[in-house]
Length: 572
Image: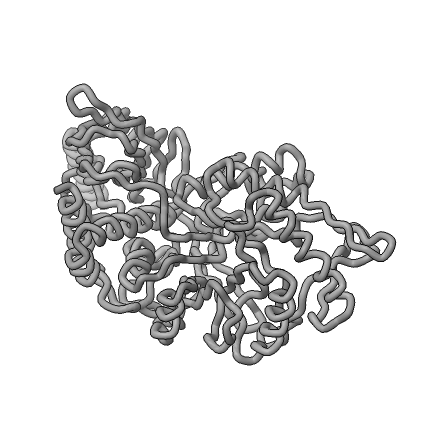
């Protein structure tokens, strides 16, 4: 028995000794802080999931024109937790010339808890349910071990930049495990002798200035409506929209005006409406003013349209009622409102840039009430241009700017193209639909499908684009769940449908989708420029990328080659 215990003790001692030697050897062979880090360049059209782990070596180079932004994306990944990850970017220089300072951010991850149904073949599937989207303007971040952290770099290219190849350095620092590190990589930006100017494509992303949404710029805390703080938030919103080439702003004179009914007459004060319009003009958005809708559905999706009418006796809880346009109270109000608005727009010099919404998305079941509203308003202001998103082309001749959903544009393209050819306008819009293989801005879709939206504008000669959701943040923190549901029809609002920017501490962060959309708007302008120079080449190139309304080349390298070809042809 004693011999057996002795032998077991010896075995344990030997095993412990061997394990100690092995651990010592492993400790000696442990990689240093820099060797264990992956720091690679990734094309910014690639959506990098947090769980992604394979990144082939790639040269960090961009090719751009003057007047746009260039974007670079680097990833950092480690088997250890990274603390205090920071990034710095030296200005890119070419001989004695330099580009402006870069803007840096870290791509954040947000939850998409309800998947798209009828999704496309190239939909991105995240095992975790989290997707890259917001570009967070933080000085530093921590990265959990095994996760991949994208770094997002944006550089504005001045319209007077000297053409050439500019070179700079991206440097990251931090603590990997328990060791400090510092790594650098070079990048280059080739600037072509081509300049893109102001946008010519009409683009509107509907936005909210309601404190119910803008409170998220204030950490979720409410604030006084139309206070100095509120006006500053509105200006910040306008500035962001102008930065991203939006040139149409939906501003409602019904919602923003003050109404008093005295001595049998409506008195209207347009002061708040004017102030909002002035802000959007000053910040470079307008363009065009979309007068907000005067009506909507009475109840369900299939119900008839009614119009908004101020109450003659108002209180803080209720200021308006909804009435059929045939109602005497509705007619009395609008017979005053629209002539007054028309005169006011002329006095301000805005009448030529103003277009009027009536009611959103008329369908076959409520066309009659829509046409009735349009006919009544047309008699009051015959020079107004009417614009609306529509699900039907059977609206007679009431619209000046038709905005069908993209799949309806596809189905009835001959009709809508005829509108454009005969002097009216026909844009397209996307929202929670269409899905399938169509372009859209859903978070689950590849970034090419957001960028390609405006190549469709060029290929099919469509002069405008509309989306309803720039900043319709709901009651939850916008950095958390991205989807919501409409219980009436069981419609899921996919992640990315309701907003494309993020609020934080009085600022508005962009998203990788918003950057892709801006780049697509520049692509449109470059193709228009090339069309004037060589229409055959312009059409040849776009046809190699966009096959049909719902079929596209989804290869990033091929797209980059086509864009390079456009820039080279324009530079000749």
